[in-house]
Length: 336
Figure (cartoon, rainbow, N blue to C red):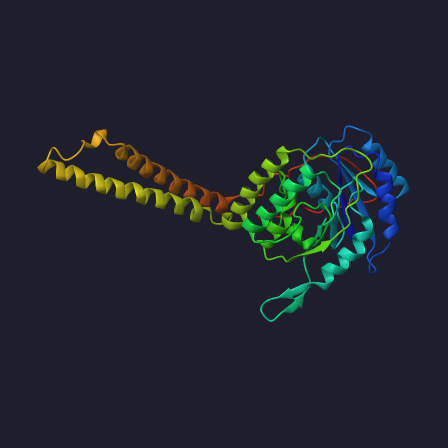
């Protein structure tokens, strides 16, 4: 089965048409398609539409108690998914369900791996909206952000934020989303050894609803990027980052104190040799560096202890109601 997970927030005008278009795809290589709409705290009539579609089109609806964000909505939908493959797409009709067979074929076809060029299937195929129907003030920051993510993480994609992606279900047994980390699933999965490919997809103009994009999203994305860089690079060994930085700062402070100590000894024989130590700014800087270095090393040890003894965090969402035939709730995946 292929599970199509669609987070919904105030999209009542597009849900029936989206459901019809997904149904028109039919089977994909013998795989049936199930549709899961996740109402992420909509203030319009979206949930009533989803309930009607569950009766007429057989979709599954999941209603969250409030707006938890896209990442949490995706995790709620994936937790109810039965499929071996999971497709995520937006509810605004800008993603084309007709791309589903091509996404599946690209996932199975795979790409070269290793120096010998052996071909292996992908675990994720990410859509690339090459020709976008968005205003420039949305496209330009997106391109800058995508370039920054590719450079910092080593996962080179043209469009990290494209909502249209296909995953093997096992990806979400190891990758857990929260906050706004949904756009970084290929990066988080890559840190676990999963392989990501890319495919050009059609981007359609918005016909209903309103964009959820805001300029502050760029800055939030940058902060999330720093989080992902830390999680993928040092999530299992925080002492290497905090401890290494602390030792470097502490070493600078110790060298400065040794230099000041040499000046103090020299002034014993020649009191006119420069200012006394208590009048030198370097003394304050050196002592501060040693103290900060000790604190960073201590934080690294504490962070290492937390990683070693951490428990499963609580779910980042709360389901109020479900509708449709899907009654199986898959246990949430283990965190990174």
